[in-house]
Picture 1 (cartoon, rainbow, N blue to C red):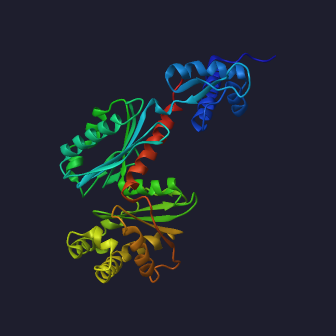
Picture 2: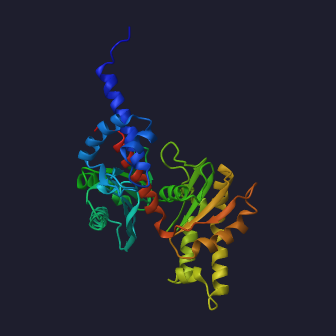
Picture 3: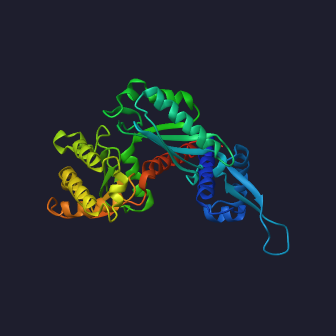
Length: 371
């Protein structure tokens, strides 16, 4: 005799059916009919048609009449309502803030923008994030509901997404920027991450670092920082501080940055672009800078034995020139010389990584709910 399924069994089965349909809609390139959904999910058409009304009512699915291929009644197509909410990625530091917005799938709907200003004060930083998020939401074509916000900062962030330590902007922790943003956006999933680790996530998402590769990401901008990728995943360590070799005084990355800034005399972008009038000066400056930072980079290379070193910079033309110079410097500092690659993501890298984290948070939240 077969026992009757319990209510909890039926509820679990319904959740599985919901998730199967939602996953298919999320991954589909265009609208699907109920028959197509049944074919892809392996569910019966009757089951699919029982699942869809709740998704339509919740706003996560859209229905439309499809143009018929032949004479007859047009079929109804269903698609994931990616415009039902907005995901945002922010990169903020003491010298400015940048942001990018995407739909629930992470497709960019408001392109990368950056505002240069002094944000070393915690309250100013909070206000800048709130203002930029508001501006990005204004560009959303359908809804202005913030679903997830990820903020990249120059500091150490723990496994739960909370900032725990920074020597660059200590007033942010004193002002509790985390709590302020959670109050400002109570309905959204809020998380923080280290800005360079977010740049590393962007390199993984863009395909510049392969799914199983080990790599060092060296980020050059207003400061020098690094992150490690091991077997295709960003390494975090016990406290979120993996890759923070710049904290070691003997590495002297801040001093190297200062020497480069002094040598550039306020024209650091022009220095990296070079040109006939600056060719010799630029070559010498870039070579000296590469030599100054190579010991720290070499230590990271020896520590994780990477397939590649990604040179990422917010300074135009810097990634390519530094990649060439650092390739020469690493040749005498590594047992196995990794491939040195120049990132093409530029200043947007941390924001793109933050947007990817926000999109993953949206996906997790959607598949944890019931319809």
